[in-house]
Amino acid sequence: MSAGASRDSLLSLIRDGKPMTMGQQLKLTAVLSFPAMVAQLSTIIMQYIDAAMVGSLGADASASIGLMSTSTWLFWGLCSSAAMGFSVQVANRIGASDKAGAQAVLKQSIIPSLAFSLCLCVIGLALAGYLPHWLGGGESIVDDASAYFLIFAASLPLLQINFLAGAMLRCSGNTLFPGLVNVGMCLLDVLFNALLIFPSRHVGLLGVEFCAPGAGLGVAGAALGTALAETVAGVVMFVYLCRANKELNLRGSTASMRTSLRCLKRAVKISTPLCGEHLLMCGAQVLITAIVAPLGTIAIAANAFAVTAESLCYMPGYGIAEAATTLVGQSLGASRRKLARRFANITVWSGIVVMSVMGVFMYFCAPLLMGIISPVEEIVVAGVEVLRIESFAEPMFAASIVAYGVFIGAGDTLLPSCMNLGSIWVVRLSLAALLAPILGLKGVWVAMAVELCFRGAIFLWRLRTDAWMKSNKQLF
Image 1 (tube, rainbow, N blue to C red):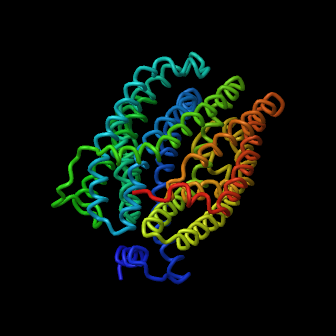
Image 2 (image 1 turned 90 degrees about the horizontal axis):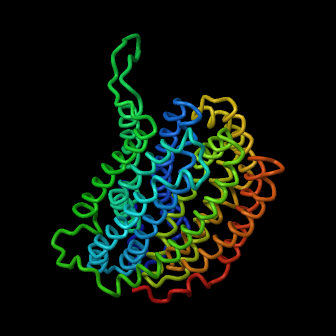
C-alpha cells in the first residue's frame, strides 16, 4: 500500500468512528509528522542558504538581515495565523465527514486572507525605510536592511497564498505534498540566490571554468530570490489543493467564494489570539534585538545566525505540532475526545524525544552549524557559545511547541497565547535585561533557555487538564 493510501486509510478510522490500536495511532502520527518535519526543515534550510550566501559578503551584510529578522518573523507569523483560522475549521469538518462544508470554508478563506495580507503589505512598505533606524542599526547596515524588508513586504500577498495552501493541505491530512514542494522551494532558492546575490563571475567546476551569470544585488538579491522561490511553491500547492487534493479539490463545487459571517467569525475567533500573540511576542523580540544591538555588529550577526542554526533543531517540533493540529482537529470534529487526548499525548512526547536528540546534536555540532553560515571567526565563536547554552532547553521547548499545536487543533488559542506572552515578557525580557550588561550575548541566551523551560512546564500542566478540549465545544 502506498504512503498516501496508508495515510488515508488510517485517517478514515478517525472519521468513521472506528477503534484504533496504539500501533495505528503511532503509525498515523509518524506518517503525518515526518513530511511536516521535512517541510519545516526545508524552510529553515532556505533561511540557512540565505544566511550562508549573504554571510560570504561580510559581517555588515549579515547584520543587515539579522537586524530585520524579528520584523520579518512578525509579518510571517501574522500571515500564518490568518491561514490557521480557516484551516482548523477545515480539519474539524473533514473529521465530521463534511466534505462539502470543508470545500466551502476553503473557497471562503481566499478573499479575506488576501485582503489581510494586502493590508500587511501596505504597512510593511510604509515602514521599510524607518524600521532599521528604530531597531538601532548602524549607518553601515541600514540601507541594505531597508531594501531587504521592502522586498519582503512586497511579497506578502504571494506568501499568504503559500501559507494558506500549505495549511489547508496539512489539515486535510496531506502533509506529504507540502513537504515535497518545500524541498523544491529550497532548490529554487539556491538557484535564484546564486543568480541574484552575486555578480557575474568565473566559476570552476570539475576542472572546467565557466562564466556564471549574476545580478550582483547583494542583500536585496537574497530577499528577492527567497520571494520568488516562495511564490512558485505557493502557486504549485494552491493549484494542487484546488484541483487534485482528495478532500478539498473544488471540481464541481457549487459553494460561493463570498465569505459567510459565521465562517469569518470562527476564523477571527481562532486567529485573533494568534495574531495578537505574534504582535506582542515580536514586540518582545524587538526589545531583545534592542538589548543585543548595543553589544555591536558581531553580536547582532551572531545572535541572528545562532537563531537560524537553532531552527534546524526545533523545526522538527513544529512539524510534529502541525500533525498534532490535524489529528486533534479531526478527532474532535468526529466527536472522539478520548482519541484526541491520546493523539495529544503521543505527539507531545514524540516532540520531546526528537528535540532532545536534536539538542544533543546542536551541542556537539554547533561549530559546524555556525561555520557554514559565516566565515567570520568572531561571529562563529559567539554563536557556538550561545547555541550550547540553548541546547539544554530543547526538550521543554518541544513540549511548548507541540502542546500549542494540540490546543490550536482544538480551537483553544486564547489562553495558550496568553501563556506564551506572559512567559516571554515576564521571564525572558526581564532576565535578558538583567544579564546582558553582565554576560553580554551569553546572558541573553541564558535568559532564553530559562524562559523556554518555564514555558514548557506550564504548557505540560495545561495539557494534563481537559480545559483545552472544553474551550470550544462546538466549532461548526
